[in-house]
Amino acid sequence: MEVKEKNDYLLAKIAGSKAIFTKRHLFNFSRFLEMNQETIFSFIELEKLFEKENENIDCLYVPNAEHTNSIVILEKCMYYKMVQYNNITLKMPKPLCDGIITKDNTKSLVVFPGDCIVVAGIDKETGTRFILHAGWRGVSLDIAKNMAIELQKLGVALKNMEIIIFPSISREFLTLDEKNAQSFQTYREMRWNEEIGQYNIDLVSILKSQLTDEGFCKNNILEMSYCTYSASDKNGYMFNSYRRDKSIQRNAAILTGAKA
Image (cartoon, rainbow, N blue to C red; front, side, top):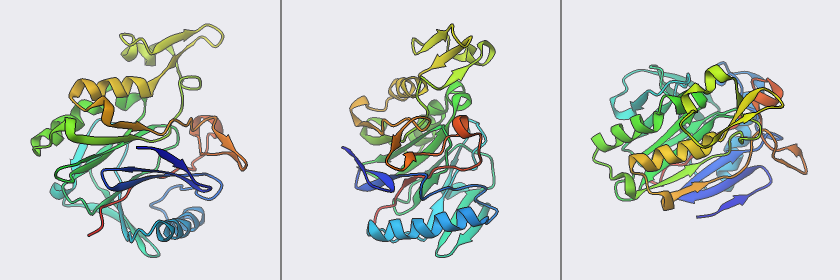
C-alpha cells in the first residue's frame, strides 16, 4: 500500500477501495449541513474529483461527530440528517457518534476533520467497513476499543482488516495542558515541553497502539504521514488546520465504496 500525492488531494488504496484526503487550496468544507457557498463550491469540485477517479458516488455517510467514543451501525440507524449538494447526498446519523460501520461495501464514508485523526478500515473478506473521528478526547476515551467491539459483534476478524490513517496534527504541534494530558500519562508518546509549559502528545502513535492492542494487524495499517498543521506545497499550507487558523474550514477524509 502506498500514498500518492496529487495536485488537489492525497490518494491511497485499501482492500480495493480508495482513500482520499483533500487539499485546502480547492476544498474548504464548513458547516456542511447548512448549504453555505464555500461548501457548495467544494462539493462541486468533489464531483469533479470523483469523475477523475472514475468513481460514481452520489451519497456519502458521515458520523455525527462530537468528540465521543460512540459507534453507530448504519444498518441499525433509522433517522438521518440529510443535505443534497448537486448530485451528492450527505447523510448523517441523528444520534451523536464519532464512528460508523456498514456491512454494505458499496457505501462511501466521509469525515470532515480539522486536525483530528480519521481512521478507516475494510474487512478484506466481507467488505464490512468503518470510519471514525478521534481527537484527543476520543483517543482518551479509547474509541478504538468500542469500534473493535462493534466489528466483532458483526463477525469481523480484526486481523483481516486493512486500515488507513489519514493526515492529522503531529506531536510537535499538538499540545495539552496538565489537566487534559492526564489520560495519556501511561504512554511514552507524551513529553513535557518546558518552553510552553504543556505536554506534546503523539496522538497517532497512541491510537495505533490502541488499535493493535485490540487485535488489528500492525502490518495492515497504512498511514498518510502528513501533518495538517505544518505540511505545505507550492500552494502554501496543504490542509485546513483548526489549531493553526482557528477557522471553521475543514478537510475531507473519504473512503470510497466498492463498485456495485
